Image (cartoon, rainbow, N blue to C red; front, top):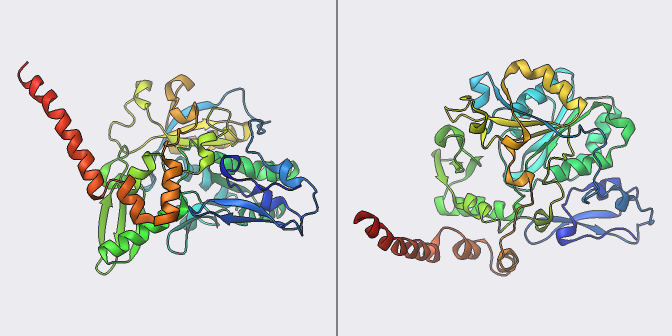
Length: 389
């Protein structure tokens, strides 16, 4: 019997749907916009390929990996390119290597009205849309099959995504086609709801009475690399709004996909050739490379293929070698701990909509203002005590 997974059992990578020879599996969105496989049993021939291809298990395969990753801090020397990237710009150098070979890039961009989706790029202009953080689960419909088609045509392909997406692709692509496949995963905090993101865009448009024409999930140019503030550009006349409304919900871990709380990939056994992250804790290296707060990438070189690419493009970086101990982050140790209220949040959202949950769980509205005021009042006696010590 074909799989019909839900909840924490499914990360939504689409590998099962892509591998089905009868197209018996469709990815269907729940009220939060998270997609799950739905089987048409009239088409299903019970071949078992979907079960065999699912890699959201503790036994996901990493046959080419080194015994442990080789970690580096890396930052592009080109300051203009650096400032267009959220971290140190390592993705640009790796993807340029593929483009120079006449290859193609798959990464998270936008379709429609800022719907976060994986797309195919054949040049640097198209690739640049994939730069930067996108704190939403991206839509992967038909992407795995497109990657396979490109590999069958003899093209070099770089695929970048979350570790669950990357692992799913690795499981889907036959071994004989992987010679020219390069995979890049990220150290992932968890993927928020696609539908919440869309509702947030519409909420801002209603609030500002303007059309959104640009988004930055983390605006490094205005607030620096360490800051987590989204900047929205609106039209007619063009203005920008910087807030932390969406960021606040993101860091509450209340709108993540349920499987993120059971993530299999929160460790140093990475499913990709190269792993990218912000290099939090870079100060432990003793370097001054990021004193200007313009960003620094953490790069894990996981496979011989990844090492060859990193070594080839390393002259484009300022590079510092580090140790695993000095660059460990929480999501290299354990999955995100979902907010105890995340089920209540999802039920409230399904029943009452975005504005309701924003007021109840977010940082807008009377409820949030009351909590903030109460917190300040509780701190007053402590401040007075310190003043008179």
